[in-house]
Length: 428
Image (cartoon, rainbow, N blue to C red; front, side):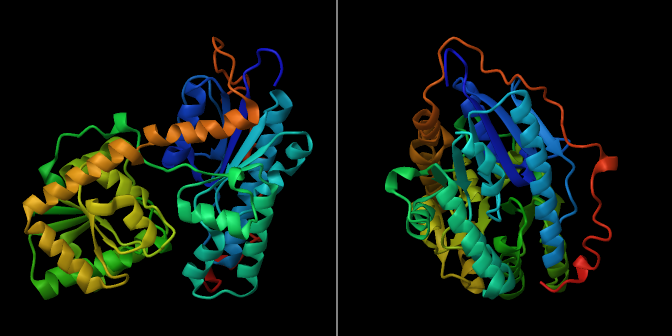
């Protein structure tokens, strides 16, 4: 950076729109608010919004993959569109650093030509692709080995790596053979100002006395099946019928969750209202009595757990390393995979309002003191200050490139037909 020019950072995220990526939204706001110019490349979505002065480049979302060929098409298409848009941004208003995030770990290749031109790469690692593959398909094999290779290449291509917790930092240090000063933990807690209590809406309880809430993107790794089986055990085996279960969100696992609820005979106790904007989602949390976190990944610091805590909502989880590190005394823990134990903990908490209040207070305190984005922001900004320096004071953080999408016209875009024929029937 020379003179008084504001550093320009390009943020590229795969497989999700800005409207649905709360971590990316926080990163954009922090960088922009501290004087960096920012441009974002992501999937198109009607809800995509940026602060004034932030550049936004979007491409038409591909059909979600359902089999191996389908996923290959989805990721390949997204990579090609992001590469096209990045070249356009660089041509019009060259950026000084590029940040990539998303799985699988292929976007280091998109950044390669810009690194040759002296633009540092920041890898924002939120999950582990090899572990996600093994969780989805129940095996390793050749694809798993390729994912491990791509992961190593991503680590070694990056000038700085950001992880969401200490476990992922350790993975980056060991599997990527990175020096300690190259990996920074930046948690993913909510912005404190956004977590004001909303007015509760009793109708969300579905006519029941209590509400248990699950909130987030519905992927196979989120294990909605375990939460639904726990709800079934609570209703049919324990005999508790005064609680409604709301599963708020969307994703590829939603249709399977709907079918499972019907098979378990609990449809009258559960609802799937779909994707909710932040205000609506936080209204659910302001109304609920208990949060649910059935995730089974030891390495995950659950964002939904952070949001539960911010609203003083105690939650039930499985006893996993990073979940316990995150929540401490703000949650109760069943042995991993113990559905009956999970259900018993729900029953016990519903019967104990004093305990619920104690757990809720512990969660609010943890968020305010340690977990909130307000406490993580300095670590994130520090990564770019080390790479680019602090922006000059007194200049507007303005992206000079226009905000509209630069993706090719839809008539020029490749179509899925013929390229991934039969992908939906490809075995998982």
